[in-house]
Each structure stands twice: as structure tokens, then as C-alpha cells.
Image (tube, rainbow, N blue to C red):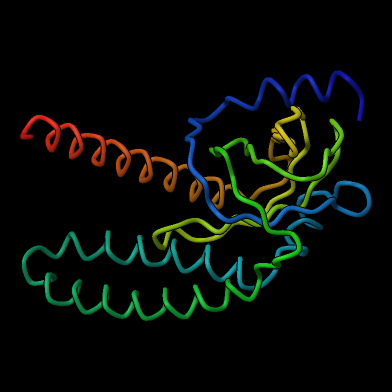
Length: 199
């Protein structure tokens, strides 16, 4: 990878909102050259494809029900219960994709990039295979990312990487998950302030 491409990826690092939050990820060096989009889609493990499709279907179904008005409330409740059952199954299936030997935790993430601490010092320009296990039923994502920064941190290294291969619907999942997490963090801070002011 030449310096111009690397600098371009560094510029793209902040293209989307990034939140500091630790989620479970699997990271390992990608063998071979970076695939084109068609070859990349063939690499995505089936459970990650299923998880993404399920999230999209659930959201579009609930949006359609909103147009039906009050009559749709009971049907929407029933569908949410069914969706929870499917979520539980998907969580179990995705857990099987989590390889303890490749496991790490994010420091921060967003729609264009990922930052994590790792015992290995990857080199700038290295291509990584990344599996992200988002919290609170927000789904799971498979992507390829290029290392754009490596910083020593005690006995570990802080790695910054920009996605170079990711499906658009998966990018949307990450963006939504980061915004959900931000609202949870803000709510928690507000609750803490309220508790402190009442004591």
C-alpha cells in the first residue's frame, strides 16, 4: 500500500461519528490481497449475513405497521416478541463465530473506523479481518480494515484502522449502534447528576 492511499484512509478515519465504547471484536491479519466487493461479499460468514438481514427486515416490518394506527399495536407487540426469540437464536449462532484466540475489545468505533488495544503491534497498511459483535441486539458486522496508526500503550498497542471493505447496511448498523450507545451514555450521565444533586 502506498503512502497516498494510507493518507487517504487516515483522512477517512473521522468521516463518521466515533464513540468510545468497548464491544467484543475478533481481529486477525487477512491472508492475501484485498478482494473486490463481490469477492468480499462471498467471504462474509453466513451468520453475519443473516444477522444483518434480520435487523433490516425487523425495522421495515415495524415501520409498515406504524401506518396502520391503533389496530396495529397488538400485532406490533406480537412481532416484537417473535423478533426477541429470533434475536436470542441469532446471539447464540453469532457466539459460535467468536474465536477466543482472536478476541479483543474496541476502545472506540464508528461508521468508518475502529480503534482497539492489542498485544501485537500490527504495521501501518496491514489488512485485518474484523468481526464486530454489537451490543443490545444491534447486530454483528464482518469487515476488512487497514491499520492506519499504531501507538505503544504499556504492554499493549493501540491500533487505529479504517474499514476498506464493508457492506453499506453493515455500516448503517454500526452508525445506529454508536448513536444508541451515545444516548445510553448520556442517559446514564443525567441519572448520575440527578442522584448527586439529590444527596
